[in-house]
Image 1 (cartoon, rainbow, N blue to C red):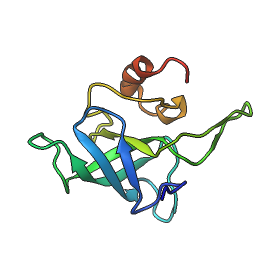
Image 2 (image 1 turned 45 degrees about the horizontal axis):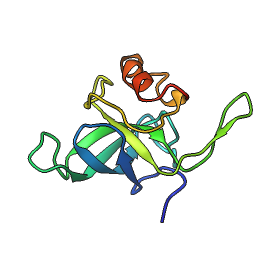
Image 3 (image 1 turned 90 degrees about the vertical axis):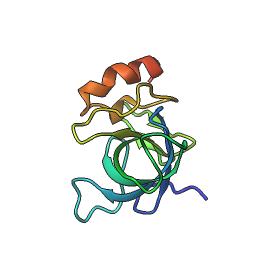
Length: 128
């Protein structure tokens, strides 16, 4: 069952090559009482599945930026964007991506706060 909105206990795919495969949202950063997170929000998550014998391991707490959601994203020009899965990119405390590549389609709305990630995302998709 897919959740349309990202909230605590939601499972997300990882959209970069940081060697984590699946995350579970624990908390939304910068929101003490906000229930849902949307594209571009930073969350605290726990790694649920990872490649063995790598720096990122299961049950490790990480920060991540949400880059895809099943819930529709409405832009100012009237365009509505919806993805097939919920996905995030693992970041460090400074906002740098832990991986070197980003996979899949990623909305430009998710990186407007993260100038350091823009070069990696522009390589991933030129359409969005």
